[in-house]
Image (cartoon, rainbow, N blue to C red; front, side):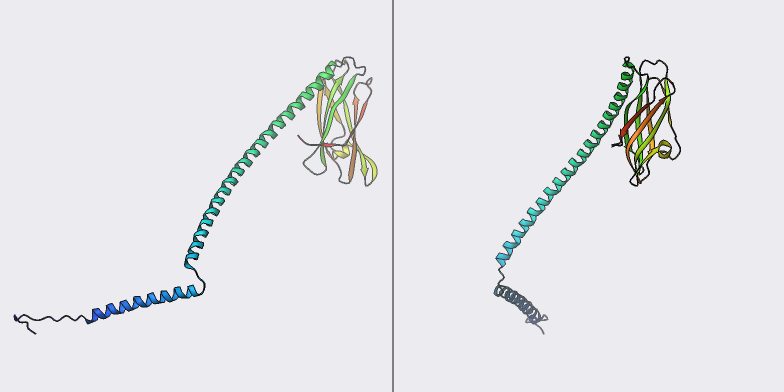
Length: 243
């Protein structure tokens, strides 16, 4: 077709674009209607949107408070762990200091025993005497260690020498029985020998039969000098804590 001036006339079809716009509008209206129906259904079922939003806010606040409490508890736990570790170090330091003090006391006790023996100038009996004796448990079952110190007594100028005999009195299957040093050492030791001028310490390991119930330890000291009477002393079988 030609226009009035003879130019070709272009005819534009607007019907498809209008139809598309109407379809899109109908879809949006339908979706809005579905949403309105959905909200009405929830409202009829008792759902309150505002109340739900308020409840969600309250829950979020509660979660925040719980997280804060959790952080505080974790901080307190870390502080408690730090304090516990510090106390453990303090206890270890105290135990070490106590061990050193106990060792120092033991050394001073030995020195005191030595000086007591030296200054005992008025003693009427020549020879040796048992200054101290204590028993500790060994690492193996029914094993023990006897710790004993001998000191000089009297005015003897030469070295003191002689033998020590140990025996353990008790009950075996309910009957009285005495075990000598050979039985307590598995036949390895029959007697102990001493030879000192002022002080000598002994540490003798003993192995007691499981069925044997010890009651007292008998220590006999025999001097190599014939004019010195033997010494016999009995100690209750008491186990002390090992140092």
